[in-house]
Image 1: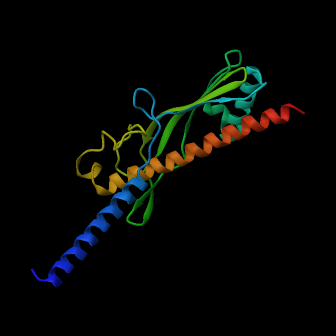
Image 2 (image 1 turned 90 degrees about the vertical axis):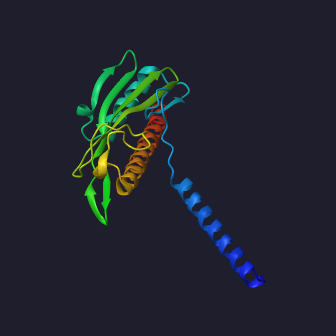
Image 3 (image 1 turned 90 degrees about the horizontal axis):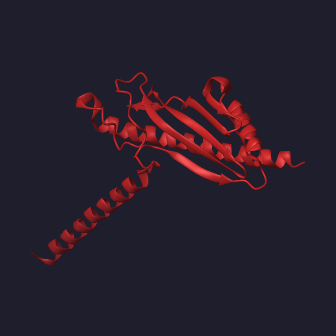
Amino acid sequence: MNKNDHLKKTIYLLFVFATITTNLIAQEKDSLIIPKSADGLAEYSEIIPIDSVSNSDLYLFGLEWVSKKYKSGKSVIQTTDKEGGIIIGKAVTHTLVYNNMGIKKDGGYFSYTISIYCKDNKYKYVIDNITYNKGEMVLTPGADLAETFPHNWTGFIGNNKQTRREWQSFQRQADTEFQIIIEDLKKHMKNSKKKSEW
């Protein structure tokens, strides 16, 4: 092998290495970590301290937030317990976008439970039971948001490159929506405390 061939081979190997590295970095960047409960299902949960606020005030702040955040606040709320400081609601995400070769389709939505538990000086939110419901595409409902790929999307129609890409997109869309919901709840609870201190 002459010097020129050796140089070409080295450049080619460097190019291949750079391409593989770039692809791995892109895949890692695209991966999304969905928070999970102890049983491995999707769950967004956090305890938020708020000094000098009673459980009954936090309960009222939470109830007010649900009514404002969800247009059909009363139909979202499933359980309320003022004395126990508990609000439990069932809701759905916005319609997911399924990108079918550049044509946007109704990809379905995730149904979920949102719970707010209030105690003196703190509250806890939990978003769980996050389950996929199909839209106009031929995709089986019932998968949990935390699944790497839906256990029940099988066969050629259910398990292919396109549906794998779209599932990741559904997860990103839902996660973004849940992050917005959580930040909105935190902001409301904090601002409500300030308003009550006048």
